[in-house]
Length: 234
Length: 288
Image (cartoon, rainbow over all chains, first blue to last red; front, side):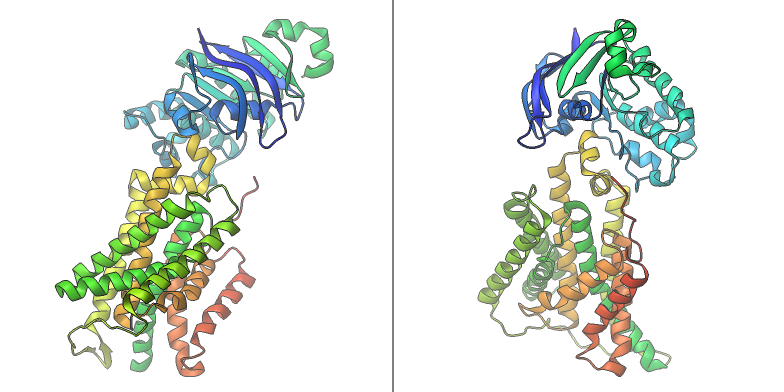
């Protein structure tokens, strides 16, 4: 069964459509990459899924039920996690508070302990203000915050865009492991080749439409995809 | 020397009033993101509420609680009927609406209670003398009450789940929503709290001086000055700057006279902003 089904989705921030009839689905345990050039509508698609896009037409279904009218905070409670590209932590809160502030976690203390075990760097800095941490630590905190609710779907908006090259492969490894803890992944990514390498399927957006889609290895081998969208060397 | 210490003490009490009202302004600015010009008249509502409660029961504590609750209710009603509906508009629209609310509150108070000045009928107490310095027990009670209110507000902000959520919304409203935080629950608590805090400031001011429908409006400018000097959005900054402005105003009175001491808070504001544009405790605006 599909965790997420996006059906003929159009919409944008104002009158102008940025998405023009996009259809994408994410199956249980799948990582699906959404690639495309700047301005193709990738981040807008992510915002539509989590409920931050003001105007949408078409249908978004999560675990079978239509969530178009569900407010953002309720989508989070239902099991959709989101890591925005920038501004993905609360800088004036401590590391621990960044996790405690997430609503809808019944076993909060135990969940924080579990996440500190996964991200040991955070455990040692739990009383540090998040805004004073390094980029890599912030990134870990952003994932930990999004994982607090044990989401079944996690939407990642260009997770490697602001990172130093050394952190990029570490981040892709972390994403690759997400299905094993029960989270399917919608991965918005500029580094299409590396993203497809850890994905099951891929979708390439162009001008707010799906230009190509298919299994990740098929897209990686496709000459037209390589020429137009992926770049020869990624 | 005793003269100056006396001025310092009365400056600190005046500073607590400014600090509390600035705290209300800075909380609303940090979370609802507009300068709330109805803060001053919510102070007045608190003072009248306390006056009525005190007259009915002869207990300053009951009076104070009545005033604080009246302020909280006004804060909530303002949010529910006005600011909530304008939440998607620019902060200029919200500012103008809050000025309108301020006029409405003042008019209601003027019609209900008249425009003559009223005072809290408190028993006269002989001041204690510490060395040469006369210390009024009422000042100590008021300072203690203000310190308690500040402690409660900071405990709510830093030790409770709803306080954490308020600070999270202040940091990043969109990220707060994707973390499951409902904006309306945070806003409801914010407005109850901001209303009660401004009312408390008005109650202290009313006890120290006189109660009239115009009192809060007159206290609004120093409160804004303190919120800006402290760094807008910083609760600690608002309180510290309030104390600073209160003390500077009182200590300067022998030099500049009573009439011009208000101007000093703006001089202080100008100097701080020239040297440190983000205010004493303000955050640097991050790039988005």
